[in-house]
Amino acid sequence: MVAGSEKIRLPWLACAAVMMFVASPIAAETTVRVGDLMFAYDGDRWRGIHISPDRIEFQPIGPRGEDRRRALVAREKMDSHDACQVAASNLLSPELYETPVAGAATKLGGLGAIIFSAHTRCRNATPAGVVICAVHKGFAYGVGTRQIGCRDGSAPFSGQEWLGEFVKGATFTP
Image 1 (cartoon, one colour):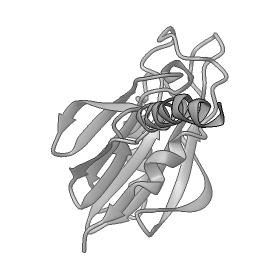
Image 2 (cartoon, helix red, strand yellow; image 1 turned 180 degrees about the vertical axis):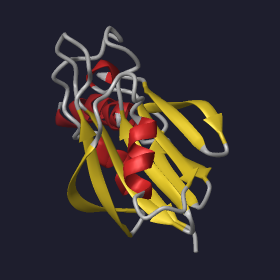
Image 3 (cartoon, one colour; image 1 turned 180 degrees about the horizontal axis):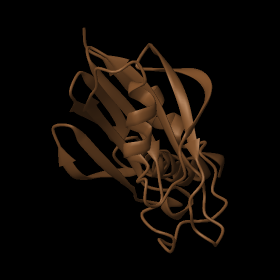
């Protein structure tokens, strides 16, 4: 009787192992380039839209995509000493955002970077815009998130934790 139950149990165990493998999340890493910035991201969580040689906007997709806001990676030719301040202001739509304020130092693609944030000019509760900026070979590179408008439907109190996904995936080519 024991031998018979082992015969029945073995196919179920094999089936369960196959189901676990098929159901396990395997990240579809995708790589894109904006100037000298190589950028790896999870293709199961983000879709690149509005792609040009100097800018890519990412739309969140997949499970819990509504918990994340659109992200933007862009570069601008800058020769001034305040390149990141200018780039952050440009990325955060001056019509919609107050002047970005420089905050903590961080890293972007292995280079020193600055985090800028700005509140919207909206009357309703909207998340602050955030840009992480570094200068490389005469260009200001920004990775950030912003509202499209005062009523764009984003979760008003969503955090920026997911922005770290983009920063971790960034590397500059020499």
